[in-house]
Length: 373
Image (cartoon, rainbow, N blue to C red):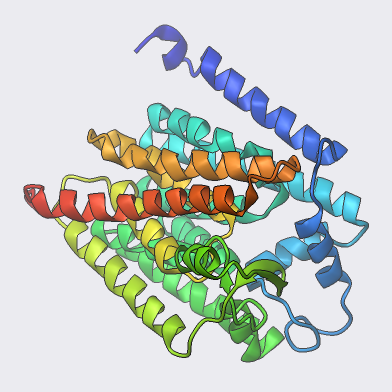
């Protein structure tokens, strides 16, 4: 290791990637060019709604996300957009630091590279908050701060729900105290959410305000869109067709079975738990979800970066959906429409790349020689 690296001096590529992030957040704050306000506008609408959230007005966001919404949405849409940009930028840096502390500088640099294609839009959403909390939770547990790590992971689940599928990494690494703390904190958070929003709060989040269609970008939705040509704007997203009765629960079961298989294979395998197994588990969740908004690919970035530590090149498949989606959404935000056929092809390619992550992991883990416990 060189002297600058030992001293913690940033390399030129790291400085450039961080500078790119500064420019991205400044563009969001300034509102140029072609900066959409959809998320900020919805946040303001929710924050200004009278009465209690979920009980008196529909809210499609979980408790942790609602707290972010209240923090940034109290003023105008322009102010909400700027504050949201700063929150997302800060979360991005926290996630980068967490990856560095937990899994090394090389993984942290990969994190910066993998996230770069998403900078055209990801600072306009709150998804990085959950990424930062989840990565911090696992990193803290790895460094011996298990209670703090468990609380951080529970907070991540209360923001976006999906980080629950990376929690088994704590069990594999024998961080029982962190896992117990996460469970207790999560139960307490869910109880508080129930008291505030009632039982219907969970339904509203689980169904995205009672939407009945497939989101266009989902694995099934893009196929339905291509076959029918029908799409509409429903409950805050572009959707197509109708999700048949029983399809939602069936997809949930398929996702759970796949995630369980991923973590069972991860036991006694030569993979960093927060790397390839976590990456594949999150990819499986996205693969079977009836909603797969473009910003969701940022959920893969930290785990893809960590997976690069294990040697095999296949974890870098994570970069494929990231880059494809980043390009696609940047084009849409710049008012460049590829046309239905072009949009469907790019989305289908992204979804196939996510599927490839899951399949490659399952095959690789099944073939890998077990290591001593």
